[in-house]
Structures are given as structure tokens and as C-alpha cells.
Image 1 (cartoon, rainbow, N blue to C red):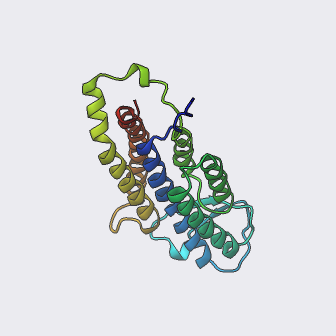
Image 2: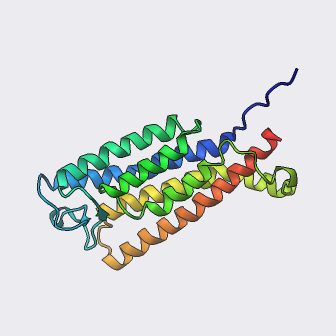
Length: 216
């Protein structure tokens, strides 16, 4: 009797996808809230300022793209889609249909005022989400035990730090830093986002490494 092999499942990669997918969607909620605050008025172009001048705490606003030429409708759409993405990331990414719906939801969020910069984050998350149920090609050529142990131990700290940096940059982007010039605020935001992006990718590599021994 031939038993069908169990489906591949990389648990730590899945956890990383779920956490990052939900965290990144928080920026869509903040965009949406500030767009809703601008009320039922038309947008002039496809590129909008999510934060109205009267709500800005520093010179630079938060740009977004929208195909819905109304701030209120755009904001509601961004918030609702972000909530759907959070739900989908946390509950549905184990399924084969999880990654394709995930990328579709994020593309829609980008089109309805959820922000632009998040593209740099959700795209690699989607790419790694496709590894959740794949046999890792480098299982048969495992890294050295020392490297494997180092990466495995670094997975959780890097994931947490990446999330903290991303959330901090999101908060500062609409709250500013009291007493700091706009140039310094921009440096802090861009530096935090860059560090968050690097750590995101490294934490996924660590997650894949961590999945090796349990699935060998």
C-alpha cells in the first residue's frame, strides 16, 4: 500500500508571513483614517495627500494613490481592505489559495489610498509566502550547523525588531517628532523603513533555515 506523503508545511515561514502581512496592513488603516477625516470631498488627481494640511504635524504629508476620487470613500475602502488583509494574513495563509489572494488584496489596497511605500514590504512577504508549503531546495545541502544555529536563533529577534521599526516609521510619518526639523524627521523615517526592510528579508531567511531541521 502506497501512502501519500504529507503536505509540506514550513511553520516559521508561515508565522513570519502572518505577522508581517498583518503589521504592514496597519499603515493602510492609518492612511484610511486620515483620508476619512478629510470628509466627503473630491480628490483632484490620482495621487493624493492622505493627511490634510490642517492635520499635518510636519511639512511632508503621506502620499497615496487612489482610483476612487473621493477622500471619504477612499478612506473607508483603505480601512476595510486593511482589516481584511489582517484577517487573511492571520488565518488563511496556510491554504494554497492564501498567497494569491494576499497579493490581490494588497494591490487593491494600493489602488484605494492605502499608501505607496508599503509595496516594498508586501511584495517580498508575498514571495516568501509561496515557500510556506514548498520543499526547500537547499534541504539536501544544509548550511553548517553553526550558521544554522545562528540564523535560527536570530529569527524571532529580527522579526520583532523589523515590526517595531516599521510601526515606528508609520507613527512618525503622521505625528512627526516634536522639536525636530523636517529634514531630520525624513532621515529617521527612511532609515527606519530601510532597516525594517533589510531585517524583514533576513528574518525570512532565518525562518526558512529554522524550518530545515524539523522538516528534514
